Image 1 (cartoon, helix red, strand yellow):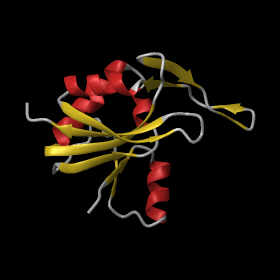
Image 2 (cartoon, one colour):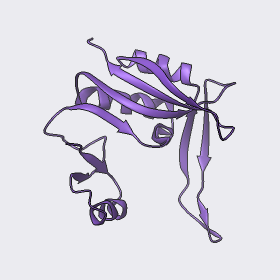
Image 3 (cartoon, rainbow, N blue to C red):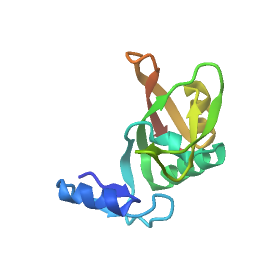
Length: 146
């Protein structure tokens, strides 16, 4: 059975309303899970939201701690070709109103795989999609026994 975690009460309540019953309202970085997991799936381009290299390493170490031996992470990376990474501050705008700015960290897949290796994961790249002109890669990280 899958378990979800969502930090936003609004999104959490929407998920419940749509039938997602095994979801926890909490912060991934601080929530005390009572079990370990075989697989962690990041939908979309969620790793971007780590915002900094420090944040990326922090979340990878957190994932490593809550995965079973040989556990895996499946995620999609929006690959940038010419840099190792690219940090931007994004300010959402809707209907001429501005939201709260937040940091994004776009990654070169090869650079990301090297960071993951240093954080205790072996990695493979599986699917590559360039149909929109933006290169997306499906990456599988497997917890190594360190």
